[in-house]
Image (tube, rainbow over all chains, first blue to last red; front, side, top):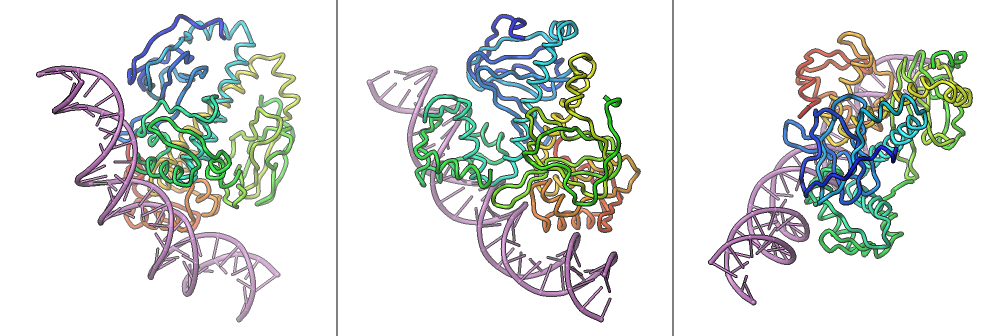
Length: 199
Length: 199
DNA sequence: CGACGCCTTGATAAATGTCAAACGTCGTGG
DNA sequence: CCACGACGTTTGACATTTATCAAGGCGTCG
């Protein structure tokens, strides 16, 4: 699958990568930066379905059009995989089909975790989100959030005010330190216990 | 895939089909009745991850243990598919792998719709749930809900009281008629408009 | 009949959303 | 360099939604 990656494409902050309903011609792999996928409802609400960081693959569709839109959260570099050449390869090489299955299963697992997350309270959602971003970010205690509070709110299904207040409350109980989009984990066990009222 | 279905197995109402952490030896296809899959958290909350009706396949795992538990909602008949024979077939027959991919993609799509659903208000969730069950049930205006209010609440991430009140309010605006677990759709467009503040 | 499970309804409390204002940061242009 | 404006964020007061606690209704089954 890695062999099918084409040259890099660049997207500026907030640039559209693809729109809902566009022909789903490419898969994308994030090289640098980050991406959000989302749907916008007729009443204006936006639900972010996922954030993708370097190494993640998105744009995974089985229909022939995208079921959501994608935008660059920050300036971003992507490599594309043409769906048509992918399909051609899949026919000849069962291993590629296996890779697709693994990717789909992984996306399914992440989505299932999101369902569990959305059933929780605001504190648990925000804390879980920080834990997730910390793990995916890989770095030590410092988490850099590339996305705005509005993005986080639309991802967690709440308002920016509640996100902000919840971060403040987590800071007050000294689980984290908040500095705009930079978060420092001060007390990991406290953060985890807020994240998980039951794992 | 259909060729791999073994003989039927029977489960009484509320009987456990498999438990979280059990070895994931079988896929199941619902013949008759209905099934819920769920997780229980340490604080006692239960999140139902899905309902499966006749024709649906569940127990789909990529790890070697189940990530959730499954129980019969009502008396249920299932056909099992042994994972080991499935794996053996997949190696020889790429078409089987394709069927697996389709099943996984379908489950992913349904889970993504659940994420959208959980971001909505109580009214929208309940109305969407009724629409979903009506479509899956296939029958005309009458919906028979095999599951209890508690099951619905745990599926939609709310309390039984709110489910009950929301059904009552949908009945008051004459979108539906409620008779215990039997629902009649009186005004489909009204129901749809409550379900979807934006599709 | 009586007990039990399930559902509904009411009163109240807690969580979250809404509206509004102030603050800080950053980039631009004078 | 500084002033200004745009934008994102935080905070406060208040409204709305949903959960919690408690009681009662309605079937079914012994």
